[in-house]
Image 1 (cartoon, helix red, strand yellow):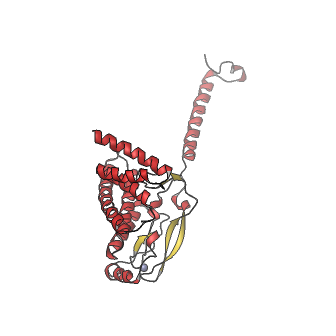
Image 2: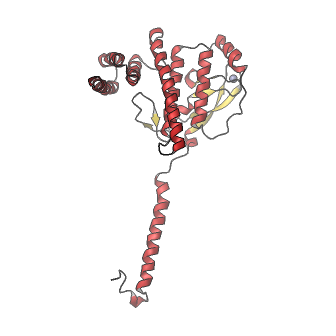
Image 3: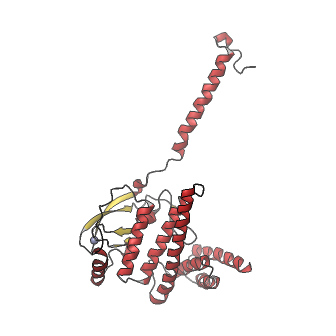
Length: 284
Ligand SMILES: [Zn+2]
């Protein structure tokens, strides 16, 4: 029996009603398709960014860069090793300032902290070889642009003989940003899978550099180091030690966090979780 039997009296034949159902289904389907992208609409990255004019102490020129609007981003659960994560945007991409005129580049937090003796080193060893860049017209930085900026910043820290911690932190953030890029690549598409593997290999190299650098930094420098207090640094080193399967070192760092009188509850909880994983590894 047709769902629409009984409508004949209104002049509809059952065949017609079948047509109606068909087209109704089609309509529904169309609407679903229309709704789908609305539900998942992702605000463009440029909505989270602001232009900023920065003065370069190396060449004494100004340049425009992009910074993340404060208060606009939503923080997500960080990775275990404290890599910050935000909804819709990888803010790490905007943590390097890079002068397009002379090549001087550094983490935004360190950009202005450069003494004259070091500007001289940058001029001699970076600016003299640097090809001035057109200021980027892009609305946002791609991962590859950001990675290039970080590598330039790392080269600068080496040339200016900066603090061990600054070099280590640049390496850590570079490793994190490579992880961010790897996250955007699919295992299912052969070219992307290949690129992902490369990202992960590179991440490992810079992570190792960061690890060695921080280990040196804690014996030479005073806290806070790169804005981190002793507890945060101990926790970070524990995570990194765990990654490199240096369980004894990881346990030592964790013990310091767990017995610290001023570590936050949250950090202690994270330390306890990590400790459980270390114990599990040691049982194997
Ligand atoms: Zn400059």
